[in-house]
Length: 139
Image (cartoon, rainbow, N blue to C red):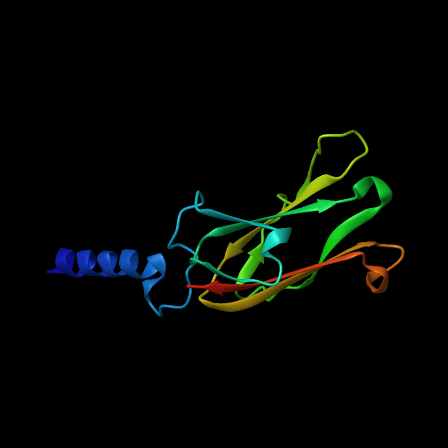
């Protein structure tokens, strides 16, 4: 009898650890290999992503001139910026634009808005030369 109870507790723990307990938290539903890439052309759109999906943001930046993209708005209850992943990938020309890369993970079902601004840190957001925003519908 004790072993049957232990088995039932173990099976329930496995079932609920996969994000099925309340239907909103989705941190374990998808694998790390599921990635949705977003570019400047997606700005202003509403994009559907799945729980647990990785969202790769790729934006051209003028790093050599001191410009960078900065996240202005992101509700971290729904999407998490993954540490140590953000950075620049080299462009085709030395001193030319590079591709800024940020990686987010969809954590919870719902709607989240992401907005970013492209500016020199010493000039401030008020002098931004570019804006990017996207609404993520996490399912």
